[in-house]
Length: 281
Image (cartoon, rainbow, N blue to C red; front, side, top):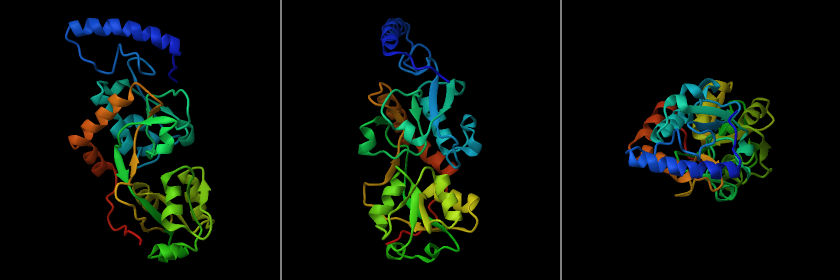
């Protein structure tokens, strides 16, 4: 587990790094994010956090160090943009809610489908978005939700989602069901409740919906996408410590990958296209 240096030590190290940087500049060196940069949790390393466990299609087989899965691949692409070699990327694990609480972090960046919201910005920093998705209602074939063709059809049903997520908010804002939305700690818990018939349907983001219905749920079906207003898409960003000196650099790296088409290529490779998921009205 990487250590988090004290603020005092960071300050001393920063001063030393300034002198080192000046020497490197004189020698024509670059500002790559590796050795000699004091702002990183572990000097010379890019420390990336994900969930425990991490699921596909975001991370394949809970092994982010392989670079397989959309978020694992994006992390390595950003690391390269920042000047790190593949071997300089080290992974740590955090809970979803833990990562977006105020306070010091043991990671440089954290990605596990964190939606960028103004509320969360009060506690942590976000990079610019590396992915934008929509929210999707899924059910089992035996659920009454499987026959729904409109938002009105869903209103009398019991619907759940992972607490603290945009999916949970979307139940209340888009469907406004007659019964309160059911909160679960993780998507895995929500999926288990759906399989057990404890809820009629759950709401997840689109790539997760395709994965759950095709790989994990028995007789899983996609009911449809929830509508979203223009400019209010669910955008995923890297989480960083509040007021992190790295936020601007990580954002620049993400922006560069978006502009050169890398992010879209990785999304095409690892995430399923929207396909036949209709938008419910």
